[in-house]
Image 1 (spheres, one colour):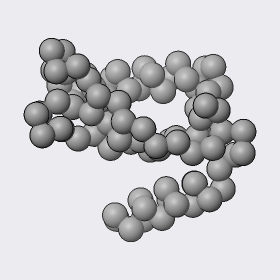
Image 2 (cartoon, helix red, strand yellow):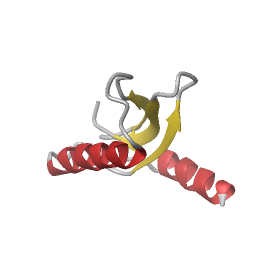
Image 3 (cartoon, one colour):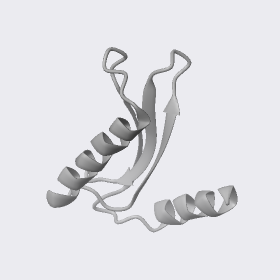
Image 4 (cartoon, helix red, strand yellow):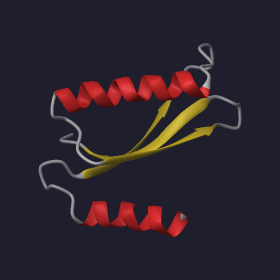
Length: 82
């Protein structure tokens, strides 16, 4: 399963739209908010929906993790114009 996911990311990067090259980034929630995983996923779905409506997001993939301090954050790769 892991190899299949890695292969999809590599294929997506290699065939990215030149107008929206693949970008890697991290989104971290403020420690004071301390959302649940369900709240974090809902926030991400809202962000994805807004970016898609504005045609600012192509293919994407995300992984939710906790920092050493316990704060939730996403690592992602996505096709974006900036």
